[in-house]
Image: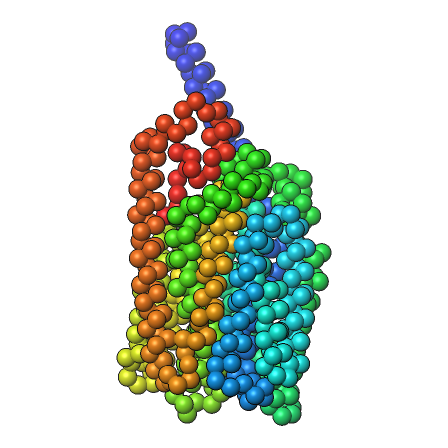
Length: 493
């Protein structure tokens, strides 16, 4: 064997050893990250799930209160019930943008836990209302307390999770609404047998009891949640460092310290970006459907067959909510894995549109109730994936938090209109409500398609190097500070 051949063999052996060591190191890091991520999941997801479940329960129990004679008990007339339902969103949407923007300055864990305690107290006080005015006051205060929750939780998730993990994690948050819908029906199914007395007293007891879990969760979360990976008490020092590093890798185009603090320029950039306004428009139809469905599903099912008792109607809502949560988790898992959002949102729109058509034109009880079930297929997919899609494409903290607040403020303003879409005199087909929802879901699908096409086009240009001229003469740190404006940044579509 020649000396040259021997040296080549030694060089190859050294390279193989180095590659093996690198692979082993990477495997060790991946395993350590997985352990740390499981700890984060166990310390965030169950509590976040419960927060949103009880918040949705506390805001939606007015719908079941209607079945138990709320209007008669408080002497409501005309559209006063719809007004009491929708006025909640006046204060709810007003505080979403500022709470999202300033979350880091508000001690996230303490702020989220504090508002939970506050809205639980207000929800219980609703059971003491005696007239229309006091009901309006409670609904306004409830909206003020609950409004910051959802935008703050979405921004909070982005502190701990990467772009490929958000949609599934949002599922635990959104499914809280589905479980809440089922839970309130089960509570009300059981209540006539466990609480005795006149129907008005029964209703008041239910409202008071349903606010107590929120107070308890708020007190618990005050001590349990962490503000960020850096302050997570349940992680070791090395695990905290791992999570910080993986976040920097995931958002390399905004990995500088400057990109992760609030800047006035980022707030303004969010308001100037047409894509963010498109995401806001995309979310509005999904929320119209979600809010009207959660409030009026018992009423819609009752209209399908007036012979069904109130208890039977409530029991029939449970499988609808269960289906909506299961379908969302399946869609979110696939969406995270392949980093595609628009396709699944459009499929959700098509499914829900089909269900609304069945309720308008369906013949027979079975066909029309099946329509309620089909609507549930897309109810969380449409709104949920839109909420996961936008923040995954905004790596800079200031722009992302502002955009989340904008998206939810405009989307949740649908709650003002939703209570008026299904007036009693439009029973049993509720043609107006279903028709308006269908038109808006078509709009949502079209906007999704436009965003999909636009972002794919930008990605193609960036991969081809057509936008590299933007960073000529810039340092690596300056490039890593550009966020989604960087020619290296590839959008999730």
